[in-house]
Length: 261
Image (tube, rainbow, N blue to C red; front, side, top):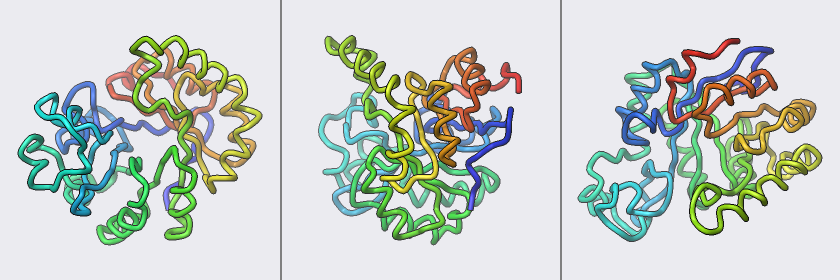
C-alpha cells in the first residue's frame, strides 16, 4: 500500500480535483493537466446517484457541477439525467480506468462525499487494481472506520475541520466561522491524536488555516502523516513544507514550480 509519510524536505504534490484552477474540476482533462504540471497525486471527490452509480462531484449541489445550468441535488439524478446538464462528468469507474491506462504512476486520494458508498468505493478500487496506490479521506470518522473494516491496509485520513463549503470565505457568517476555525486551530494539537485514533486514521488532511507547525508535529508524534488543503499560494506552501507537511493539496499546481525543498 501507498506510504503517505515523507522524509524531511520531501512532500507529495497533490492536484485538488485535478488542476481545478485551470480546468473544469474532477474531469479527465483536469487530472491530466495536473500531472503535466508536476503532481504525483490527484484528489478526486466521489458521491453516489439515485441509481447507485458513483460519480466525481465535490458536492451534492447540481449548480456546482453543471456550472449554473441546473438546480437541485446531484444524488437524486440518474446518470443519464445528470449527463444532460453535466456531459463531461466522469463516473468513478471511468476515472479509475483512465488512471490505469493513461496515468499509471499517479497516486489517488479518494475523498468520500457521502455515507453509504464505502463498500462500492473499495470494490471499484480493487476491481481496477489501484488499491495499492490509493488512500481515502473523509470528514466522517464512521465512514473511515467502515473503510478500515473493508480494507484494513488501505490508508485513511481524517479531514479537519468541516468547513467544506467555503463558508469561512463568503457570506454574512464568514467572520464567525473564521473565528471558529481559529479556535479549532488553537486546540487541535492537543486533540488531534485522539481524533485520529477514534477514526482509525493514519493521516490527517488539514485545512491550511489549522495546519500549524504544532499540529503537524503532534500528528507525526502520533505516527500520522499530514496533508494540507487547499493551498494555492506558494508562500503558504513553502511555510507548510518547512513545518513538515507530508503533502500539499492545491487547485493550482503551478505553485510547485517555485518551491524549494
